[in-house]
Image (cartoon, rainbow, N blue to C red; front, side):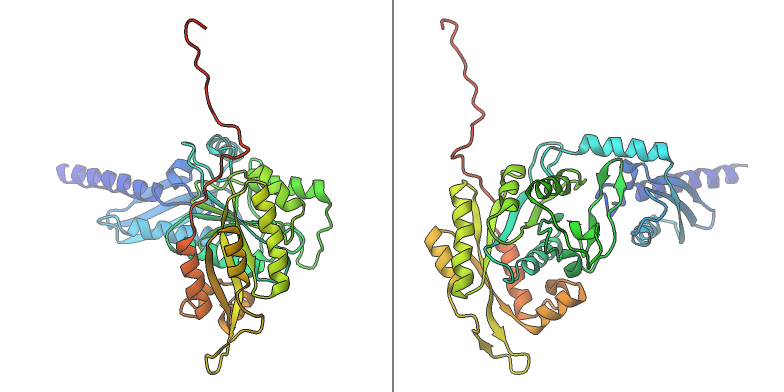
Length: 383
């Protein structure tokens, strides 16, 4: 009788340990522990060290179910005495989904990705004066490089007419909607939100200014980002409605200007930087893309687009030239394959420079010019 009770007590301890291990696993979409999300279901542990765990998914067709169950099985096998782990999945009931949505809604802060304690993520508006300078490729690789540093990174594809981030990250699915909140699509360690997730690849987006503003507002504020370290926003080229809307929706964003060495690109990029400066928007710096072309055979460098365009803009506005990214075959192949080059070919010249730029990104500091200050007037008892 004593031996039986001992084994039973040991099993109870193992169950508690397994449940705690599962509860600590982070959901890849929501970025929160499964225990906090209420996704831990039945847990059983046999006398031979075999554990059976049920994970309650937010949706029966969760696209990341395999990734999640693999992480749970790994966590369970780390518990002392567990020899085998079997993970089953179930779906939350309507009531459970509603309760979870309410909890997430209470956690969401006014600014995208801010924490309940008020800490704001660094926000970078990646912009260019004209199209075709590699702005989206830069955004994708900076985000992937930052995520590889262990940071939680979100990306908004605000280039609604020329969205390309789904292709650059190799993802083709709609976001999960939970209680009116959209869950960003994770890919290569980055959380993504793009208009491209809601339309067919060959469908043009024909929107006027008011629709664009509303779309940007939904992508930013109706998305459950969780706690972010940084948010990158890939803007449409030019100084149009998207740039103006962003300054309203994300007043603490800093401009990251992208240009090529070519004089034409430099001239129009100056307009974007000038607009940001006039609006009191901080300028994180300038990146010169396609600074050189690297021969895939001999490794020699040439400058088909000229030289020095990025440096001229940086000098004129007194901001840093963050880097000069060369154009090489690895960068092109990675974009076509849907994996950022910093991950697909980290030794490539383009990848090395992109990784260096990501590590050197300055923290945005918003100027207090033209902004009301939170001052409180304290009157003396006499008047």
